[in-house]
Length: 99
Image (cartoon, rainbow, N blue to C red; front, side):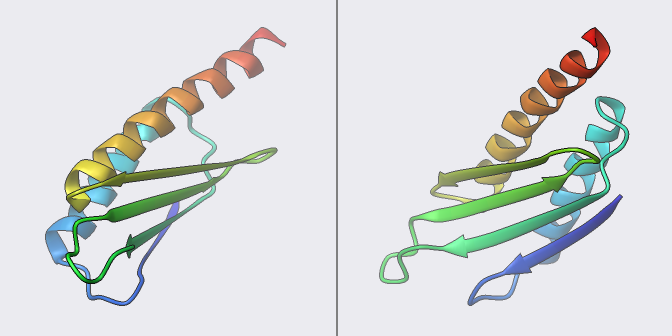
């Protein structure tokens, strides 16, 4: 699985990169054929820097999944996005196994 992380208009801290890699690698247990993941970290309001957004795009063999989550901190937005992505991947896996 290839993971691409992009921070828009700021530099990302190494602990956030490690957190993203750790959480995304755990998803391989639920859905193996993940080909490519793109993670975009954005700050929507630069005046008070309170609106952080994480966008995760997952490329599967026959479908793409896009998750967008916002929070006051990047860590909580990442965890929300990965949790939502986990649910989507489990749904996708159950659809494939029922066919």
